[in-house]
Length: 147
Image (cartoon, rainbow, N blue to C red):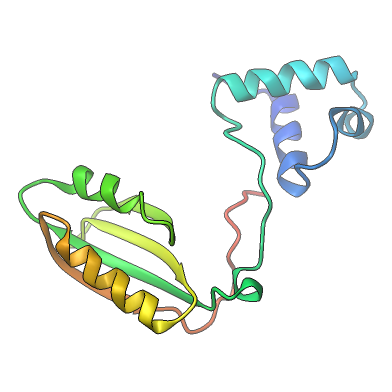
């Protein structure tokens, strides 16, 4: 699906505030509510909009530890490993990457013992050859919205 300028404007406004109604969005963009609703439905149908969510400050709810974990796989089982890791509750992102590492995971934890248990569980996944864990000291930016 090709996005036109109107679709891009709708997406940008929703990235700033997904709680706004179609009516509010229509007023901001100078369009009819019906037009906005039909475009949003089209974007949802095409899976460009996959849901509406809230951006929270993980540290304020106790998840003060962010880990970036590299995984090296064996036997070309990267996809199987990634699918298994994606099921873990603490995992925020699983990325299939280029370079000497096969996969990068970003995960959040409340305490070191949770991180330790998690890394040990990773080692039990079949075909995980090695893990390299990095603990984030400070977060300068964490916002996956494109704007």
